[in-house]
Image (cartoon, rainbow, N blue to C red):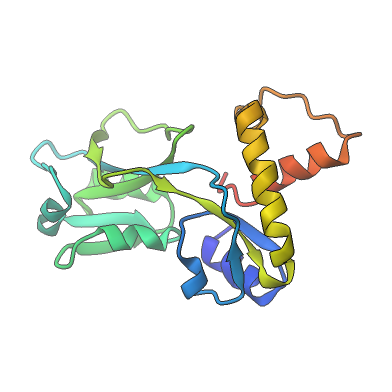
Length: 193
């Protein structure tokens, strides 16, 4: 699901909430409340095919045409003014655009647990962000009273390893346990895959 659509729906109250996004959405979506326990960490990989492309820091991006997935608009905030920005539908478009020379650099968002499969000719030049970007769950304000409980449950799941087990899909889900099912549904509700 396109995150912009998901947040619009959560903000309007048609969705109860939306998971996996960076902090600060409350300023743009006034009806959302952030659950204070984080979900995942992200990094922004800088990718290229052309051997002449060299990026050592964000300012180096000003020399290039930079592609990024449009459904991840916060990526744009990491691209300095002066860089030529190209919004792409998905990463597969990015690989084609890099191969054809339509963009010089691609920015890829990776989870701390999931490295995307890159084509053989794509080089990772480095990480754009200086520290991992944390993601959080957001609830519509009508569910604001649930945020502390959800934060507590997420923290417990992180501490007991069940969160990682679910992410790694190594757990057989006991569908007779409604609380476990809700945990799985919540974690996967904002998954881009």
